[in-house]
Image (cartoon, rainbow, N blue to C red; front, side):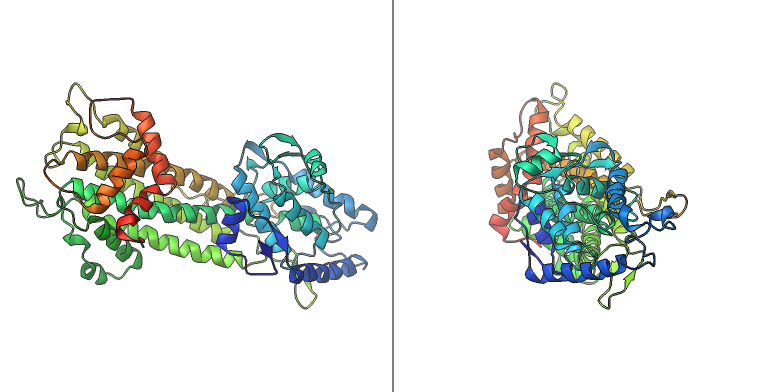
Length: 509
């Protein structure tokens, strides 16, 4: 992965954060780094105070710092701002955070020396992951505490995780890999801390996960429609064309592809005629489609933020060093919260379909709770309880973090985005959605298998075969359910559900 002055993509971030891709600096980036550093050095030599170069920070920016104290100033901002608390965040989040800060440093807009950027790349390539804590960022002036813990490791201080997973002093790990700790100079400490990199990295990873989960939700919705003997006529392209939301059309097309060739659909007029299927079945494309359109908007925001150089102050092409407010996380925070709302609603409609599958009064001929011998067996009764508990948590997680603001830094930083908090809760929401869809998958596949004498769609048969091979059990007497649910969760999470369908349908939208 060669980092230049621009052009980093979401795929690049995923390759480094999750795939462990190696990182190098382009000649263009090194030249830009050297040029902007020259500007900072020239300003540092002048008697006039320049924020971030020869002054204090935040509410202490009014103090002019003499040259003999400036290295100490840069060390001190890193040490004092590395004030995170709580559990460690995930390795992939820290790697995304570090890579995105390196991306901005290489833009030539931060005034950081080339050797600092090379050290950042060396730490990533060595598999050294600084310890970063869950709490400490307000999502304004950058993800300050998380980025400070990363900068602290570059200085050879604090704790880090080695490539073998062990926690050790960062200085020891740097020495083992032949990496010399950086000695920060004017502007550099501030430049390593002042970005939206944590919340952006988590947004990019959530978008990748949700791409899989929205396809998975279309599949589980189709399986539930099939198991409930619903009609696929509501999925006709001409119906969705007259309400031209692109996500809705995509979700309907996916469901129609899964249901192609089904012998279960269209029986809604048999023994107990229905004019229409319930909303949770009939409106599945509208709800999932709205979420897909939210994903598209969030992806646009992420792409814009990837193209940004977020720091304060910044070195402009004409040589000026100017203060700004580009570190405010509002654009990213909003879409993180939007996604949490969409995720909660997608989970909610999936849970309603599951409950319908288990209720003998609404399942159109299925046994109560899909049990083998109802009364003796409880079937999937408590699996739906678990699903309902997850949906309850998702509704709480949908409360926006970005609607809050707590002033800090003696009222200098008097409005903050809470974007880091929005990102952290979205990660939990993505995990919970995976589990909710796993329960619907578990119930729908069992229900389809209980429809004796009717032939499911080829794609459905492919899913059932694959999920059984994955260790998820089918109909039968009560058994220990937690392992089955865990296997179903893994099947959804790693993309095997979508892959099983696509062996029959081709790529889903």
